[in-house]
Structures are given as structure tokens and as C-alpha cells.
Image (tube, rainbow, N blue to C red; front, side, top):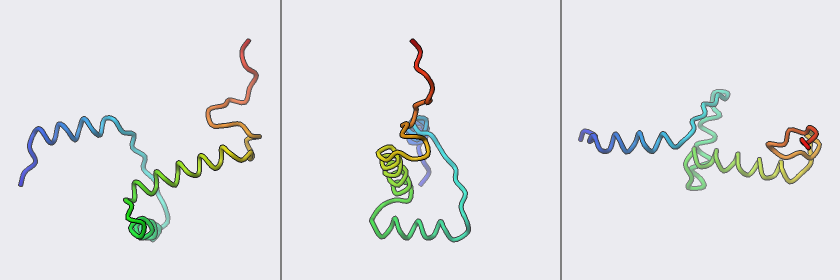
Length: 80
């Protein structure tokens, strides 16, 4: 069944609200990620977004090489 014009427009409007990131990884890693996500009833996209979010939260809670600065901090002297 062909996709209607209304559905095409709705898809375009939806995709305009999202950023797209392309990643590359070693051969075979994609299948491993897919299997991991499926085992948890999660989409690959959902798993990757969750993994990124959890890692960022964990990184922001533990001072590391950034000297404890959080994402978005420039680390410079504030303007007065």
C-alpha cells in the first residue's frame, strides 16, 4: 500500500524535530548491540540513547580529567 501525502508530511514534520548522528564501529559490533537491545525489549536507537544519557549522568557525578567541570562549563573565569 502506498504511503499517503499526509503521512509523508507528518513524517517530515516529526524528523525535523530530531538531530541525526551517524556512528561507525567495527564489523560485528552492530549485531552485538542489536542482540543486547533485543534481549531487553529495546530498540537499538533507544538503547544507544539510554547508554549515552546514563554515561553522561555518571560522568557528571564523578570528577574526572575535566577537573570536576560539568558539561557546558568553559572552565574559564566568569565575566564580572
